[in-house]
Length: 136
Image 1 (cartoon, one colour):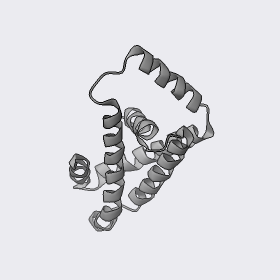
Image 2 (tube, rainbow, N blue to C red):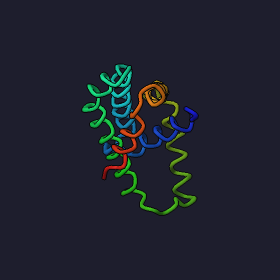
Image 3 (tube, one colour):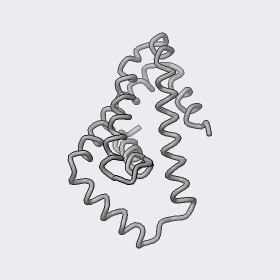
Image 4 (cartoon, rainbow, N blue to C red):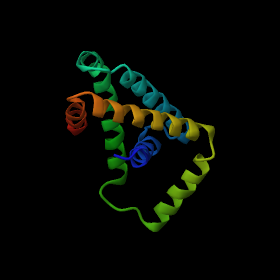
């Protein structure tokens, strides 16, 4: 599993899925969420610490599901048109120059690394994650 596509997917969710209309607020909120989740993931070393972390992980995965639902509701199943894509790229170019963007990117890379570590090191984690993310 490569970290860059995973981080890019989380970044997309973070940028478009938050409820605030202020793009910088979206970035800051997502950065806090991913930093908090990373802190939880770093505590997971074995089955016992995994069990201890499950309630906090459930809250985090619920937040991710909510971001996915909001994004899906906003875009539906339609593909963005050229105009929509151009607007999104312009917003992305503007936001990518902000310090909040770098902070989120850094947070996502730490999150992805810890998520990968826990997925490999802790039996049952991947199944737990899949089950949580499959919830409606």
